[in-house]
Image 1: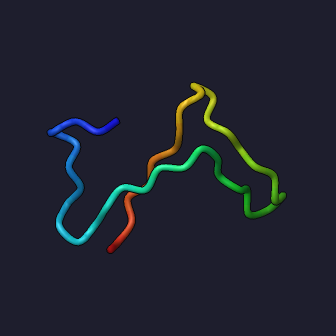
Image 2: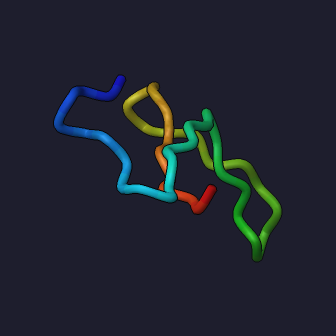
Image 3: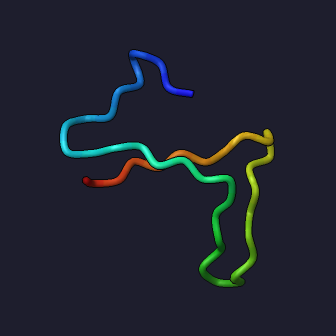
Length: 43
C-alpha cells in the first residue's frame, strides 16, 4: 500500500481502515474504490 516515498513523518504513523463512521448519522461509509481510507495519526 505504501511506497518508499510515502513514509510517515517522525512521531506519526498511518492507520488504514475499510470504513469510516459518520459522526452525525452513525452510518458506515466505505471507500468507493473498494480499497481503504488512510489516516495520519500521532504515535
